[in-house]
Length: 400
Image (cartoon, rainbow, N blue to C red; front, side, top):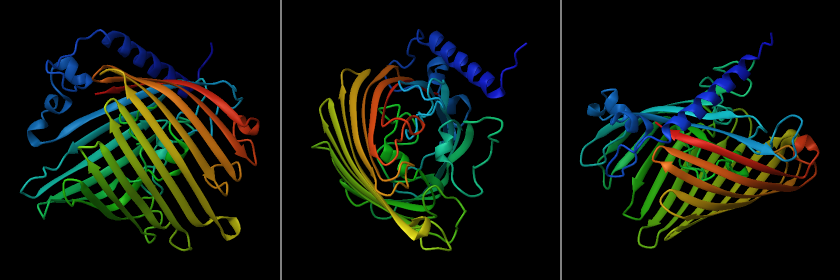
C-alpha cells in the first residue's frame, strides 16, 4: 500500500472540497432581492455571518474568503518553482493561496468618539510572504509538516475615532501598510498573480497610523511604525509612514503618494526609503492605473553596499458587463543591485492579460496568461536556465 505525504493528502482534500462546493453552489439562486453584495453564508441562510452568530447587534462583523488556484509554467521547471514570481509561485500544483477569516468592529465616523478594531487570521501558501519578523506569526506551523503552508496574522489592531475637525482616526497595533496599489487580500485584486513591485514592497507594519480628511478631496495619513514586515525584531528601529491622497469624484481621478522611511535594523545604519506614487483614472467602463515605486536601503548588501530598485506598472481594465471584466497589466522592474531578486543587476518585464468573472456576488474567477522576460546577469527563470517564461493560471475567490 502506498502512503502519501501529509501535505499531499491535505492538498487533495482541499481540492476536492473546493471543486465540490463550486459545483453544487453554482446553481444556487442569489438570495438578495435588491442585488446587494452577499457572501456565501448569506446566500445559503438569508443571514450574513455576523447576524448568524448574533454579533451584528453589537456592531461586529465577521467574514472571510478562500482563494485557490493552479498555474502551468511552459518551461516546466524541474523544481516546480515559478520564481521570481511570488505567491502564484508553484508550477502544476493546486494550492489554497488564502483562507482568511476576520472579525471587525468598524468605527462610526460621526459626531461622537468611537472605538473599534479588526483581527485577521490567514492560512495558506501566501502566508510565507505576509508574516512579520519577530515574535508574532512566524513559525506557527513547522515547515517539516507543511512545506508551503503556514499561518499569518496580518492584522490585529484597535481603531479610535475622534470627532476633531473633519474627524481623526487612529490605528494602533499590526496592520497593512500604505505602499502600493495591489493588496495582500485577494478580493480587491483584478489579477490572480502579482507584480514585481508588489513583492518588493513592505506588506504589514506595526505601530500607530493616523488618518484625517482635510476636505472632500484631500486626505492625509501619518504614522510611526517598526518598519516594513517587522513586529518586534528591532524595536528601536522606528520608521515614519505617511501618505497624501487627492480624489476628485467629478473626474474619476485619484492621485496618491505614500512613503516609508526609517532604519531596518536597530544596531546598524540601514535606512530604508520606499515610496509609491499612484494615479487612478476612471473613464466610464475603462479604468487605468499608473504606479511608480522606488526603494533604497543603506548597507543592504555585504561590504556596506547600498541597494536601489524602482519600477513602473500600468493597469488597464474594461467592464464588459456587470459580471465580466478584461484587463492588461504591464510592468518594468529594475533591480539595480540584485538585492530584491537573486539574478544580479537586472531588468524584469512582465505582461499579463486576464479576465475577471463574477457569476455570483460571492464568487470571482480569474483566468490569466502572463509572459515574463528579463535582462539579467544570471538567468532568473527555471532555476537559472531561462531568461523568460510563460505562465497560464486560474484561481477562484469565494467570499463568506
